Length: 303
Image 1 (cartoon, rainbow, N blue to C red):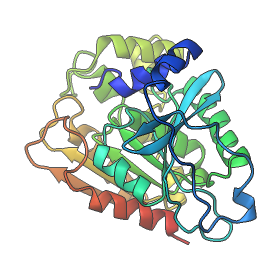
Image 2: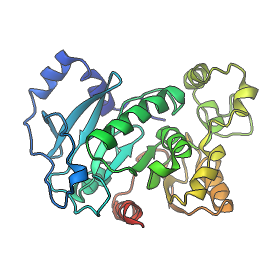
Image 3: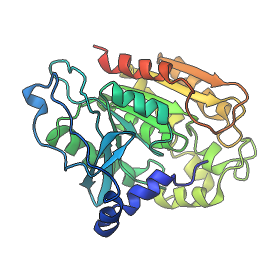
């Protein structure tokens, strides 16, 4: 299971003006979003100027609720259907871990967006911050009402919690070795012997504190896991794609993706599974991200 990634630490550090100035002085400002195919509804508000780059793409920093969000914009925009906004990929946790996927989505005209809400497990405080941020992007900056969500590892808790609350505000979910059951991670075998994973005692304690539930049995009944929140997604016909290592010992796939897939299909939902034979929790993603890129593009363009 991930600790904070280097890019997360960078962007959290950049939340202070002093650190941001020092860091961004090392970067070269880049071009802004091109206007190809934009309609009048998409021109309201410009992002703050870019003072950094990632893989040659301009990085913008946007304050939201005291948090510094990262928005990496494509250099060339894709043509946008009437009534839609700027397409974007919302990373739940660990931005830039999926290097090939993110780079290719930027080339396809999708923005890559990350709002740091670390160690909140997709629970109410994180969702409140997400809602405020989502409203700003879609209302003030012309971003589309239905982003593609990406849940990497514990990031799965964020994207599924968001989608279950707002099934009309997501076009698809791509889960990469995602946590789908909090009893598998961060609880794991030390809390419940029927699970295989080692769990994480500090994270389990933190999750219970944020949830406001001290008792292990009660939190198990609280419905905090993605596997317990699938019905709204199935009714909204949200397509899912999960990529996972079939030898994952930290977030065992059968306790997480396997259970979620079975339940989602039983609800009439559509889910595609891409196993990686012999792979453990890392590395994330695919060497060739084509199936993931195609999935997101198709989902975003669906009627």
